[in-house]
Length: 329
Length: 266
Image 1 (cartoon, rainbow over the protein chains, first blue to last red):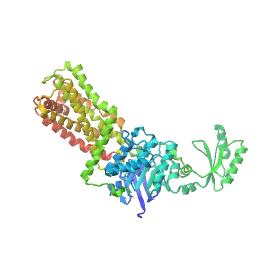
Image 2: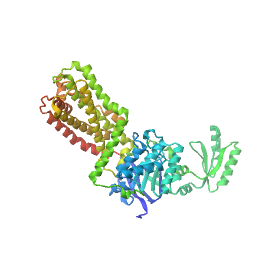
Image 3: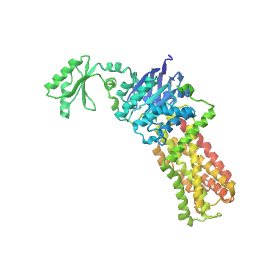
C-alpha cells in the first residue's frame, strides 16, 4: 500500500438482510486529490461513507483512512477525518458561532484556540455577519456552509462530503462549489458523494460510478465521457407532435437511436464524426419540415455516461427514496 | 497553522469524557431554554395540574395528611412530572438520530458515552429546575414542608432519582423507535397509567380492589409515597427502601438496553 494514498479500500462488502448495499468495492484516493462517488439513490454511496467514517462495520474487506484501519483503529480514523453533508451537525437553536465553538470544545482545542478557529472559519465561509444569529434563521446554503465549517474545526486531513448540495438551489450550489474548490486547493483530500453528474464533473479529479453496490466505471470526467463515444448532437422542438416527428426523422442514423431527456432535449450520439452527423440531422429535419431550436454539437455530459453504462438515467432510479436510509435501516 | 489534527487536545480519558459530557449538556440545556414550546411543555403543564387538582378536583378528594389536600397533591405532581418530563429525552434522541446528528457526533473523536450522558444530565438538571418551580408554585397556594430541611432535601433527591430513572427508560424508547413521529405516538402512552393509577392525585384506597393491587405496588406509588412522607413527616413505612429497589432494578434493566440501542442505532 502506498502511503501516498489517503484512502485505500479493498473488497469492501456490506449487506442489510438481503440487500447488498456494497458488493465488494475497491477504491484508492491519493493525498490531496478529490474523488467523486457518483450514483443514484440506493447505489451504496452512503454505506461506503459510513464504513469509511467508522459508523458502520463492513461484512468483509478492509478500509484504510490516513494510514489507519477503520476496524482496528476507529478512534485514530476519527481524529483524521471530517464528515459533513446535509447539515446534520448544526443545532438550530445555537448561533453560527456557538455551533462552531461547541465543535472546538468537543475536539478539546482549548478556549482560546476554539474562539480563534471559529472566527477564522466564519470569515472563510462568509458567515461573519450572521455569526450572532441562530442557525434556524439561516438559508439552506448558509446552513450547509456552516455545517461544512463545523467539520473543519480540527483541520481534518481527509474530508467526507455526503451529498453536500442535495436540495440546494443553483445559486447556493455554485457558492458551495466555490467553497469546496478553495478547500481542495489548500490540499485537503476529499471524498465527495453526489447524485449530480455536473457536480462530480466540476469538483472531482477522478470519478467512480456506483450502481447497485458495485463500481461500474472509474476515471477522469474526460475518460468517462470518451466511453460514450464522442460528441452528441442536441436540439429541441417546441410542440409535442413536432418532437415526435423529429425523433422519427433522426432515428436510425447508422443504427443510433435518439434519446429525449426530461427537459425534452433530443440527443443523437455522433461518434467521432460529429460534424457529418450534425449536417445529416439538419438535412433530415429540413426534409421533414421541422424547425429545431438550439441545435448544436456538444461534449457528452455525465448523464450520457450513466445512460451508456447502465442503460438507465442516473436520476430516474425507480426506488427514489429520500436517502439510502431504506437500505441502511 | 495554529492547529492541526496532530494537536487535537488529548488529556486523560476521564477528563475528556467529562468535558465532552458537559459540552453536550450545555448544548441541550441551551436548546431547552431557547425554545418557548419546550418551556411551556415542561413548566406550564405541571403547574396547570397543580392548579386544576387544587381548585377543581381537590375539593372532592379526601386526603388524611397534615395540611390537607394541597400537601398531599404537590409531592404527587412532582412525581408525575418526572414521568411526563422524560418525554423530552425520547423525542430529542429520536430526532437527533433521524437527522443524522448522532452519526456526525460518533464520527468525531469524542467520548462514546458523551451523547447519552449529556442528554440524561441535561434532562435531570431540567427536572431539578422544574421541581423547584413546582415547590414554589405549591408554596404560593398553601403547600408547606412539615419535616424540616432534611426531609425537604430527601424529597428533592428522590424525585431527581425518579426523573433520572424514567429518563433512562425514555432514552431507550427514543433510540429503539428511532423516529420522532413514532415517539410522538408512543412515547407518553406508557406514562399515563403509571402516573394516574398511582397515589399521585388520589389515595389508592379509593380505587377498586383489582386496580389497587397494581396501584399500591407499582414504582410511581412507592416513590410518590416516599416523597410525601419525606415532605410531610408522615410514617414512611418501607417506601424509602422499596422505591430505591424499584429504581435500581429499572436502571439495571434499562441502562444496558439504552446503551445497546445507542450502539446499534445508525
